[in-house]
Length: 292
Length: 243
Ligand SMILES: Cc1cc2nc3c(=O)[nH]c(=O)nc-3n(C[C@H](O)[C@H](O)[C@H](O)COP(=O)(O)OP(=O)(O)OC[C@H]3O[C@@H](n4cnc5c(N)ncnc54)[C@H](O)[C@@H]3O)c2cc1C
Ligand code: FES
Ligand code: FES
Image (cartoon, rainbow over all chains, first blue to last red; front, side):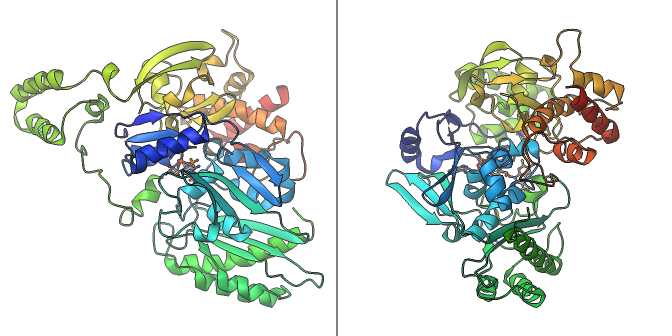
């Protein structure tokens, strides 16, 4: 299908883009990778009268480490993560996540920031960013503000962004030593959204127990991406032996709220969260010990 | 995407998709200054008034539709395709795929699903492989676009084209232009050392060895309805050894 008619602007700076968004209000939609927006427009599930293309704004495609954070700019494509030595060596969980999103063609256009900005609980990065304790940097007419990712998804297909704000950057705290993370997703075929997905990030102290920094995020088992706070609280201070992993995964499953759909019945998905959580914890522990 | 949305139609915020829903996309593509009531009326004419109605429609259409060039949402863009620059004035809604096929008549690039799910429309933009159906033509000012038509040097085929022939990497051939464009970029990505889901060691940098498993994973965005996959994998592997 062909989208409804729209006006198109491609501002050359962030300031221009923000001014345009302020002027147009809810008539405007930001276009970054277009891999969710264009299909929605073709299906006429979205019909924005004005598209503000941010792809022409220079200097937004950075992946850098600065002031204690890994920073991912608005125009970093999924495939850039698969390419980045910094990400591959320090944040293998991000490679886990990006490499199961869609397929290589889609990943060459889709942006990491757009994956959060879209607000779809079926998207994969939200769970990972929840596990990593990421911060979203939004820029708008009132300046810049930080939004912790756990406050970023208030409802289905809704984010904390105002209509005139641009998600400029994702900031991920550089983890302390003895940290490992992993993202596991079950999909029916390449290019499919998750039946369920689980992201786990853990840090161990000198005696091998889990510190308070543990993060667990769940994909596509609720109306929003889910931060499994009870499971996180459970693992804190524990030695993650087999019994503890089992219990943590059962708690995480209890925190999911899946519904029956084409990907399976709710009970199956809840059990899948249990299995994936256990496996992701084990994988994260391997990575703490230096595995990849 | 389609299934994703259909599984959630009840939860998606109210849409305006009922408007124009019964209108033929070809008519809709022309940016008519017709109100919804006019459209309902015209559809009514089509279904109710037979030949006379159709005639009435065409008169109405001429009177009431602004030609595409004068549409408020027309844009001029210079597309560089296979080294040639084309200046085109198009509706902003035209995808790169439709610009290539319908405006430039480069019909080698195919439309399969039009929703980013099959890879038939794969082209190279500044060397990166993308689905041209999920990219607006107006966003490509100044980009270097390469299509299947631009790969060979005249009569001399690109090594991947030769390999596809040698290994029977196709049956009906519909997916083939996309497969080949995708594979061209794949070889460059592997040479550069990009990781994939099946790459065993993320710490390893430098050229990736293209095992059949790596090729299958890296070609996973290009679907072949005829199932020519064994030949496609062999062709890519052969080309990776010669290039
Ligand atoms: C075939 C296919 C399969 C897919 N499979 C998966 C999958 O398995 N997992 C997954 O996670 N995703 C999947 N996706 C979605 C893909 O990852 C999307 O690209 C992503 O969700 C949105 O990123 P984008 O850059 O393309 O954003 P766009 O499509 O450009 O934008 C999406 C929304 O976010 C807004 N937006 C975008 N960028 C910003 C910004 N910087 N600031 C403020 N608002 C912004 C837009 O206005 C729009 O509302 C798939 C897509 C396709 C086509
Ligand atoms: S036509 Fe573009 S991916 Fe199918
Ligand atoms: S050769 Fe027929 S679709 Fe691939």
